[in-house]
Amino acid sequence: MAKRMEKKIKVLYISQKPCLPRIDGGTFAIHSLLRSLSNCNNIDTTYAPISTPKHPHAEAQFAEHFKTIRQVTLTLNPNRPSWDVFNVFSSIPINVRRYIHNNTMKTLKSLEATSSFEWIICDGLYALSVIPEGWLEKKNVIYRAHNLEWSHWSQRAAFSSGIKRWFYHKISRKLKSFEEERIKQCHTVLCLSAYEAAYLRDSFNPKTHLIYPTFSYAQIGGVELPNSFYFIGDCSWQPNADAIAYFLKEVWPKILINLPRASLHLAGSFTDRYTQKESQVYGYGFIPDVKAFVSDKQIMISPLRIATGVNIKILENMAMGKPCIATPESTKGLLEPSEIVSIHALDEHFAQACVNASLDSEWLKQYQKKAQEFIETHCNETKQTSQLESLLHER
Image (cartoon, rainbow, N blue to C red; front, side, top):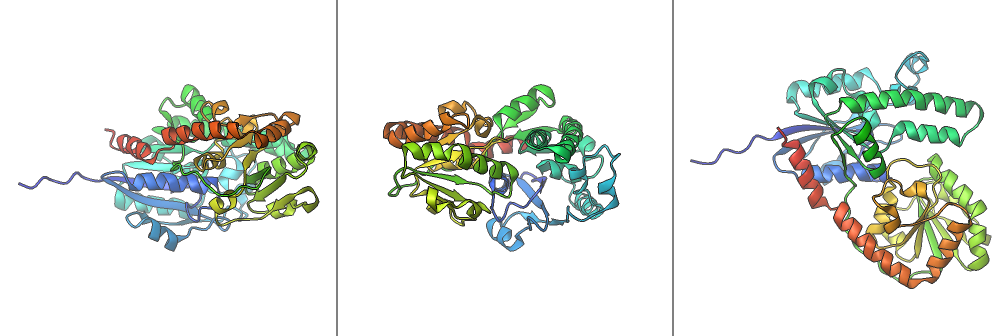
């Protein structure tokens, strides 16, 4: 008698923006988890990304990448004005309310009526906010936390002034209550950041697990430009713009004193505005091929002063075998960051570290070995697939 096939477990995966095109760390992380899910045994996944004018879902590209995963696009415009957005008395933060639309709720309820999902994965706080009322109590909801959203807004307030400072603090306070209450109700939390995973596990949800995005280690070769540094990041995002503006003003001139021929290469949307050829600073704007950009550069910098979650660009950089000099803020999402990244405050110590690293080939070799060990241990796709599979088959 033929052995009966095990019934597939039905999973609904909602992400706060689409996994494709992969244009930033968030989309990379979502794509990474979907890839692991697609490799799990006896899992039937329906993918429902929130598609907005800023981040539209590439349906055809997705169908090509994930042939076995059904897709249902949740289209909305969070920038569309509505009276609810201006409801100052609501306990739901204004930036969360922008995502709560009746059409989205109807679509999700209709999906549930026909599929009866056993697990709901909400990737990002805004994905967690759009699910229908009652799902957190009645269903197994997995929340994937990219960061502590309230902490991000608190940091933005600290770096702002006047009405912006007041407004950001107000958002942060409401977000903190909203975010923590929702996290408490989730069955499981998957966190991208070591620091935040420990905080959430100890304070709000004991079923919190640290799961990094996955990478395959492949050292990028090529003839490197001597004394060349690089940064990759979208500078329409305030923390990146703040970091580069401050670095160019306060740190880069100190590096040039000791390395007058040093060059700085900036990649990512809006980085072209920072080009200063007289100071050997070159902004390239958005680049389609990160590996090609990195191949002839020597050292990555991550000079963030505002940061939550994990810096995925640092992980990606480690997977390419390149060294990184970073601030404490850039690295707090990593396990034992001082072992794998050169960490310094954004002052003369950061500048001196750049100079020393550029002249020390032995440091580079030691870094490459530790980075490879970290990636192969903590960012292994096979291990993550096994971990997800065990969780989803939990009874």
